[in-house]
Amino acid sequence: MPGDASGNGVFEKISTSSREGRKSLSNSARYLESGIDLEKPDVIPRVIGDNDDGGSLFRFELISELESAHSSFHKNNNCLYCRGRIIIMSNTETTQGNPAVAGLAGFALTTMLLQVHNIGLCDIGPIVALGFVFGGLVQMVAGFQEFKCGNNFGYSAFVSYGAFWIALGMIFILNHFNIYHSSTTDVGWFLVVWTAYTFIMWIPAMKIHGAMAVTFTLLLIGFILLDLAHFGFPEFTKIAGYELMLCAASAWYMMAHHIYAQVFGRNILPLGKPWIT
Image (cartoon, rainbow, N blue to C red; front, side, top):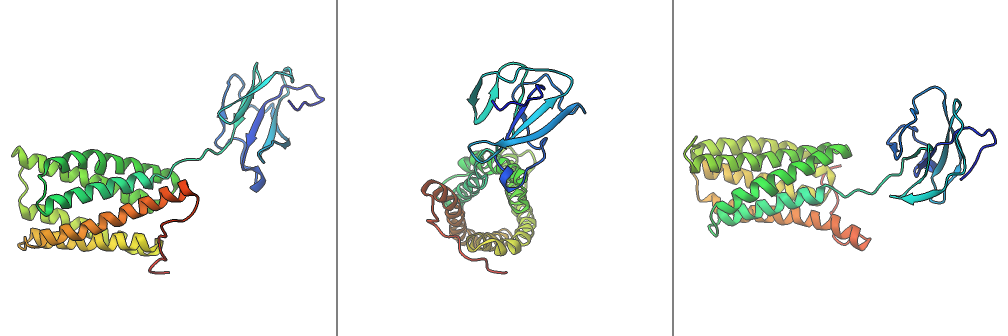
């Protein structure tokens, strides 16, 4: 372990992003051992070198306390730390998955199954179950993860459409048990407000990339067709079913793009250029 002639207590920190610009020592720090308050004024941080993965090695010298500078190190969870009173903090950035792959899967699969129902091939039961779990819960979880990533578009889309599936499932259940019946027109107005929301999201979708633009264009058209079907034109239900199957396939395509790109290390399924600049 790098030592200091002063003999002061030593505390180490690894930061993998330091060569691009050293971050705040308190930012994303993870304390592997506790017992010393690093907020105290008698704790002095000092950069003492670089570690072998390109990060910076920090020493925290505790003026008021003397500790051994020769405790044995071992490595765990990509963090170096040692025994005794010495504290190791890690600012190592861990690789996280893309929440969109789960959100897009939930959106696409549930949308596809609903259209199988709309064209008359299955009953409503599987859609209700899948709508609550995959279309609803999974999309909302993905949306809140997008929030952590700072992606307002993904945050709004996944949380909102996740709520759509939960609300739609509740409408089906309430109708089935005749607790609070929603007429065809009632559901139509429910769909109209979602059409308006989809239109709002369609505009920035065209700015992202071609695949997103295609998905939201098909979704917007599908909602309009379902609106018509619920306001006196039931023949549009099947048309909407086939059209929204294409929307689900487009969402699956985006999901596959993200997964394949990571697994194969190259862009196998291109997303296309944005429609607007």
